[in-house]
Length: 122
Image 1 (cartoon, rainbow, N blue to C red):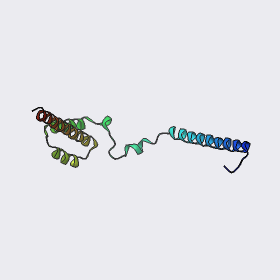
Image 2 (cartoon, one colour):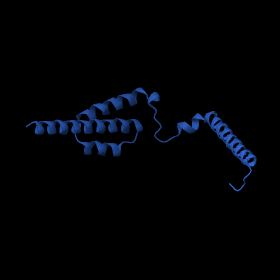
Image 3 (tube, helix red, strand yellow):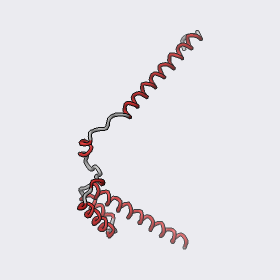
Image 4 (cartoon, helix red, strand yellow):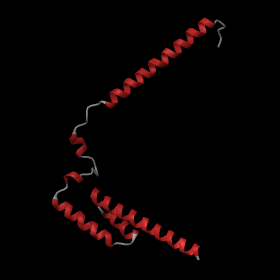
């Protein structure tokens, strides 16, 4: 802005563009190096808390989960399901209980909507 020489201004603008281009290249190189990092050791990942191990469930765990699923179908109270959720220790158990809570809440919303529609039609 301080110079009146147009040639100098062009040189400054081209130098700025070159610096911006170099910065973009560095950013791209950084992203590429992050993208292709070697995978972490599986030991570290196996020790993560609540790591879903649905692929590694044995028959006993599968039976317990199916029994829990049947038990959850009979429960019609969100409060009771919430108590079960707080007491559950395994990831898969909590996953089933949360799904049952979502299903029950969706049914409650649907029932309320239908009741509202009936009221409005009268």
